[in-house]
Image (spheres, one colour):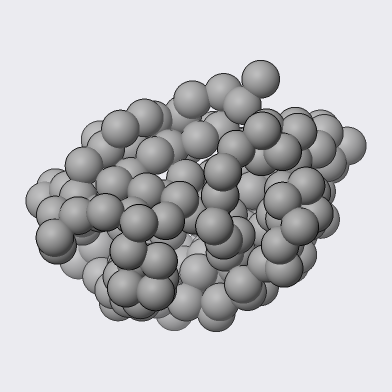
Amino acid sequence: MTDFLLVRHGETVWHAANRYAGRTDVPLTELGRRQAADLGAWAAGQHLDAVLCSPLTRARLTAEPAAAALGLTPWVDERLYEVDFGRGDGLTRAEMAQAFPEELAAFLTDPVAHHLPGGEDPAAAAGRAIDCLEETAHKLPDGRVLVVAHSTLLRLVLCALLGIPLARYRRVFPVLRNGALTELRLRDGQAALLRLNAPVR
């Protein structure tokens, strides 16, 4: 049994405009840095065996205070990158509606069968992240692991592991809050959701 504390990175400078941030390395805001510090303060009182994070700066900076509080070095894993949004990266939905209206309409109907143009297959993204979690569970079969990654990737992972059709990820999990905890337990190949969007303060 391995428990994963899944955390979306802190707020970034693109949040105010609700821009899609995929592989672009967007910095944290002051609030995002405070969210990282709050996560670190929470982690100091926890028994955690490892800290995993995406290579993107917004995830690494969110993970670092927690790792430091625990005396751990974060495991940076490329399988935890955010989904690549292709031509949608850096755009708002209104800007996408101007740039590629038909593709956006198809995406909003089924974001897996019709992912954003030039972007990554969401099923493949979920698969790579799940490989990372399962590998970690094999290494730490009785562990508690903090994972700092990204909104769309984590929502896809939750759906895949809980048996929810991937195409429903936007509806079933409309929001993963920045810096909040979502706890997932893997045991004998089965997943259970223990907490969703729990505050760290």
